[in-house]
Length: 344
Image 1 (cartoon, rainbow, N blue to C red):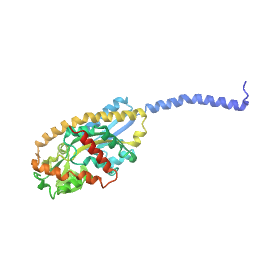
Image 2 (image 1 turned 90 degrees about the horizontal axis):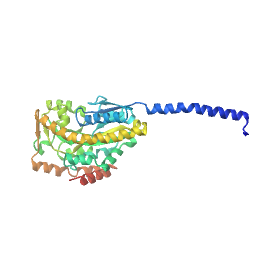
Image 3 (image 1 turned 120 degrees about the vertical axis):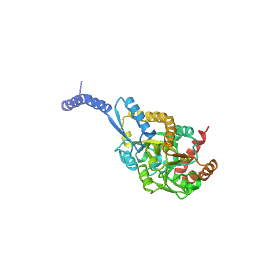
Image 4 (image 1 turned 135 degrees about the vertical axis):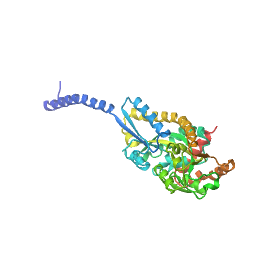
């Protein structure tokens, strides 16, 4: 027997009926959200090399594993704007991903430049082990989290080299030259130790600057030199081998946080899978592009004694620069520990 007043009982029944009628609508809305298609625009400054290849593999994996719920779009060769604009786009969610050397994000978090520390990576195989180390990945992926950046992948691209308008055959030939570097104090300090004048510059400005004589050359990647056909402006590459160049994939945290949990898991897992695949691919591609450059220009190695002297001159750069910035010293110590542990 109910003691509820008739008016109250009637309102309760109506509310219950309304709730029952609303439930299918709620479920339908949830299903619609689950079936929503999310567009993932990825930008990079390079084309037809390891960063571009990572994008291709990553997009294919994500589209398959998400059942088409994530649709990837790839924009190489700075089609989405110069590097600083692409990074800002990722931070604010205008684009969903940027792929490039972490040093370009030192304005977001100064610790990103730790990968420019010279002398820690011996060769490509060692660089692969460093990039695949869980401790290294955890550290690098955490940078930028408070500034709208979600790191998802890290891999080694190749050792740095110096492309120049006139040949650099000896350490003395570096002195007095204006050379482009990334906006990382470690790279700039390294060149100062070698007697050169470092000029921070984004990739899109390098070729015109070399052609116009604004700079004498650049610390760059041989694969970029070759694929961008820079041999039309500068014929010489001196293979100094330091520092090693790493690439990272940065996803918009704003976009990532709005994804359903299962899609977040797919993004994280497939990013690492694609990086694992691109590591050996990058090594093979690097050797192919060295050969391609040799057909148009000249690859130069410093005399063994001078190469050893160069390594001695730059050995302390990483530790000394790291002391100047809060947090960078801890990041450098981690890099040193991982590099030592992964040596063979």
